[in-house]
Image 1 (cartoon, helix red, strand yellow):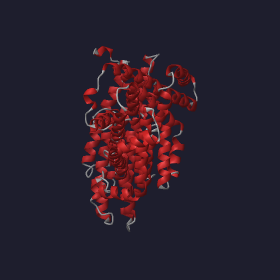
Image 2 (image 1 turned 90 degrees about the vertical axis):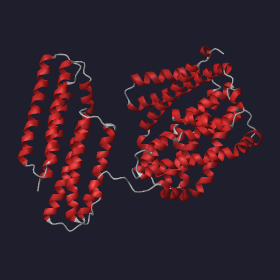
Image 3 (image 1 turned 60 degrees about the vertical axis):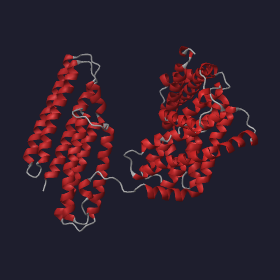
Length: 528
């Protein structure tokens, strides 16, 4: 056997095209039906059966059970979906994802894909470039997505045809079926797509690389492997998202155990009772039946399943606001003291995030993740503030609480100002023009000094004064004026430039606004 004759690159290219096509399809459908999809999800899941049917329909359209699972986890985490109905959609998603196999087994291996797909690629590609309407552009992306999926399938099919001529699989033919289950798990987990795995299994079966019985076990493993997406989605998630994510894992484990126990019975049903003789159809029918049977068996026990998840996975959320977590909101004096300490931590976290935006520090999390955590942090504080407001407060206590809440709000606004100009900062950092890159370095140097002075004020907030804040405000105002002057000087020197000058002026103004918000936050903190 000569390995250079094996079209492994055709197989990998086909897989890449298929996954890219799925990505384009998902993105276009999300853009075309974003609000409609969310509204549908909220209004058509008010009982278990409707939730399952909705999950089946949505996944059949979007062609990605992984994406639907992550969206359901997000909706559940936001309180839009309850646990029971979220689980129902997850069950339906497992059935909906089998639609890919049906379409491909009917069309993908019977058509001259090149002749059929090329016009769609032409229309889709030209539409993306030349159509200005967002809706028409997304429709063009949808066409391209479908086209790339089938084009990728064609490459895989041809690659496996050559593969089958050179590779002898007899050395594993008589091995334990669980080997094929394990391979299906690994493949599906690696590419995080049961649909793509199914295409590989169908291509292998069509080329004669595997037998139908081996295909059954590969499909069983493929369904289990796709749960890796849900497992990843539960990392650092709140309790409801964890429960929804693990519901998919547990259902798929149950389904796999059931399918392994009755695989011969399913095969008998397909071949001898339903009289399906074509192997490709038989494999797709097996995939649909194993998921349908699992849903039918679990659906009557959805309440008990939800209760089990509630019992196994704690509903107690991990709090970010550690100081107020230990405080009793009914004790006003202690609550205000805890809120003050929390305010110090919060402003420091906001400064750290701002430093992250400006690449003055590095963190393991992305800026978007850190910003999201800051917003969650503020949410916990607002809840504590509302609880404190229920007490009988003196005028002095009420004023102090309001000052501290204003401090939190200003700190968050400071980070939002920088979040809004992150793309401008990134563009300036990548500028090929030395004078503009020098401006970026100047901004970073000024901000590094400002944050250093501000951190010192916060660490000694009990002895800091308005005079200290005013002095720092004058310094940062000087930085802003110098940066604006430098930009105007650059305009004189550079008649033609790749850099958007109005965006630069907006950028330094937003940095100034961010600094002023931080100073107001500290001002609110030290006010007595």
